[in-house]
Every structure is written in C-alpha cells, then in structure tokens.
Amino acid sequence: MTDIQNLKREAAAEALKFVEPGMVLGLGTGSTASAFIELLAERLKTEDLDLTCVATSEQTKRFAEERGIKIADFNTIADVDLTIDGADEIDPQLNLLKGGGGALLREKIVAFASDRVIIIADASKYVEQLGEFPLPVEIVDFGVAATLAMIEAAAEDAGCQGSIALRRTASGDTFRTDGGHLIADCAFGSIPDPETLADLLDIVPGVVEHGLFIGIADDVFLAAPDGVRHYS
Ligand code: 5RP
Image 1 (cartoon, rainbow, N blue to C red):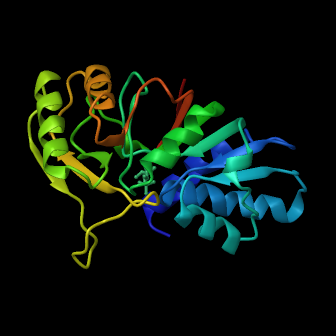
Image 2 (image 1 turned 60 degrees about the vertical axis):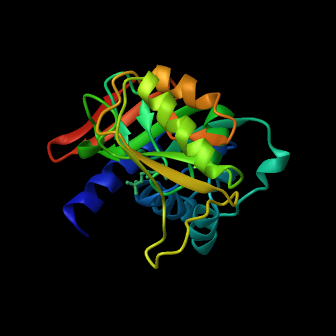
C-alpha cells in the first residue's frame, strides 16, 4: 500500500468510529470513501451493526456489494444519520469542492439528507482557497453551448476566470454521470468567493448541480504523516 493510500485509510478509520448500530449510513464515492467501505466491511464481519447503507454512485454500490455490504434503495429513505465521503478540496471554512469522480449530484442529495456529514481525506486536499482543482458542474445536453456561456458569465460575476471543458473519458468518449448528464470542468485556478459562485450557478437553468458544497461538512478528518487532524 502506498503512503497516500495509508493516509486515506487512517482518515477512514477515524470516521468508522462514528458508525453506530442501527444507523442509516451514506457511503461516499472515490478512493478515500472506498477505503472507508473496506474498513466498514471488515468491521461488519465481526459485528452485526444492523445498518441501512445507501450509495452515492453506481460505482460505490458495486464496490460495497462486492464486499458483502447490502445497499438499500435510496428512493425509499428520507433521512440519513451519517454520511462519510471524500473531497477534492477543503478550505478553512470547511467548504468543499467535490465531483472529481462525477458523483456530485447524488453525493449532494445524500449529504443534504444527512444529519451529519464527515469528510475524510489526506492532508493534500486542504487548501487556503478552493479552485485549483477544476470545479465540476453537471449540466443537461439541451442548449449546452448556452449553458456553458451562462456558467462563464456567472463565474466572471463571482470573480473567477478560466477555461471550461466538457469532461471526456480516458478513451475519449463524452463522460456521462449516473444521471446521464454531462460534466463541465471549470479550471478557474482559484475561487475567491465560493458562496457567491454557488448561488450564481444554482440559478443557471441548464445546471443540474455543481461541486461546491458550502456549509455541508460537519467534521473533516485529514490524515497527514504526523497524524490525523480533526476540524469541525
Ligand atoms: C467524487 C468525489 C470524491 O469524493 C472526490 O473526487 C475525492 O475522491 P478521492 O477520495 O478519490 O480523492 O467528489 O465525485
């Protein structure tokens, strides 16, 4: 296991301590969330926690089920006790930039339905200002050129500039989210006012959702070589 994988596992181990019997548990998407799912699966071999787990992506559903964790139908569940997820960037106010894996819509729905959201990451994800990682914005196909222009205008109004590109898969195909939508990756370099940008993107009609998670994280566990830091 690489150093970075070890750090992800250490952050995941801290989050696992918050899982209690009978919980409805949201499972995030990405490599750090997967580290958590692996630890959870190990724990479930020796403890019957009677959990109801929901997944934030088809990828997470498969990953969890392959490890013996049953995934419930989220269409029948209104409240989640706790969600554990990763992030691409975390700022000092615990605002997040997410969606590197393209799962931001389901991640945000599950997070909003959760009483508590714990974010786990290695310390490289902690930044003074969000935006070095390109901001993913999930959009519909119809009127894509107009939507991209509106995103650009919204970004300018929020003090951001940079190139916006539709995401492609490694083989060059158009990337599709679990909801069948497109992702526009917005390489702004920095986002000086994430709240304003989030508000402006929220009102662009063709935008389904964006990767700014403002005021959603309750706790963040960041694993560094000298230990795991806790922010809340
Ligand atoms: C997926 C996400 C992930 O949480 C984010 O990309 C972090 O992934 P990783 O833990 O692999 O770095 O938002 O949409």
